[in-house]
Length: 454
Image 1 (cartoon, helix red, strand yellow):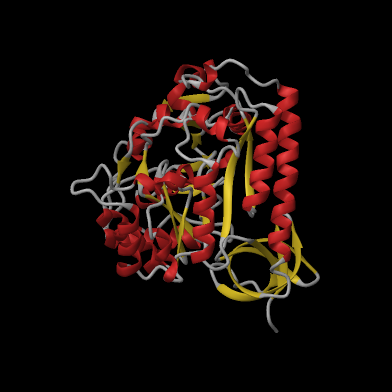
Image 2 (image 1 turned 90 degrees about the horizontal axis):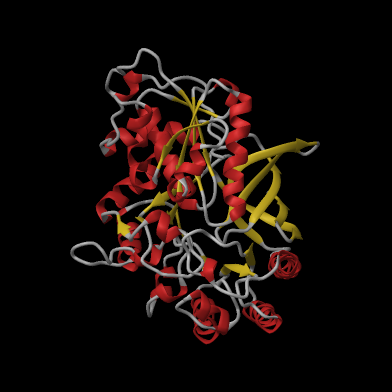
């Protein structure tokens, strides 16, 4: 959930205009699933704030709740239903607006959830601010965006120091398990100038890091005229903005062109790559219609590690895909260990409506999927721990994001290294959104701990 409570309404004088609203709304924004969903809710938050409304996190005091749903797994859709009912119980008077992929592929089902109000499909998501407030002005010039971004960043110690930038939506791939293509439609890229202007404003507002997000990020620019690509976008951002840290979200392995990793010669492009593999079995990759293989992925991982120092290479894996034999699963385990991923996102396969795989024979039973999932998660924890243990004794730079508690040593802070390792350490009250050195002392599968220099 986006955690950005704002203590008071924005001062309209600060933004050079007079607000038109006699009764500003309190709006709670919740997001399930991918970084793209989070990016969309951050954009909506800024739009609502710019129009005089307040973003809150307490359901009891909100007027409207917006839930950006996910449909990538059955668990994600259950989460959307559970959260909707929970918000409704906490505040029966609040209108709950459901949008996103689950709301798009099953709008009638979503509308029947206890507490559900408006259902807004993805095709109309860009108009959410105006649906919530018909008088809302959605498109803000850059000079008006910066103070909104600054207020958004400063709203809470729980606010993200990493800004998620939506550069692309939709997907033209035909992976047999994926419902996202159905829910999001064909690939659509934002114009490069709009992306750069947004990141310029974010950097001026004090953000330390921008994360480029999209459903099919590697396809960026193919639909634009003239055609361009992700590498050109990255070079332009690095050249035309002062953002200190630039990170990429998930990137399909077949979208990585020759010499792409040379971009990391600029240290502002952070050494973390998330390349979804989905299976370590060539037979299953073919059934998934994934445009990669063990051999090509191995070559890609070797090239990335040879070019990018201290690379954190993470991936997604689906367990129990239809037809996955014991041999297929054993091949996946072996390949994951061979590549040495530093972080695994493991999903138990669930049939998604409208996808080809939902109709495949040889569906895997629940108990078998559960056993295999546990095995792969255990391997992922083993690999993560080994990667984190290698950091013990090193001094690394950490962007501090949130205070997570306190003990006798003071506030307990959490943040991320440039290669996306979660770090915890005690520190002063003013660490939020600062980058400081930390000496790593302890390692766990989920991250590391350390101490700030005296």
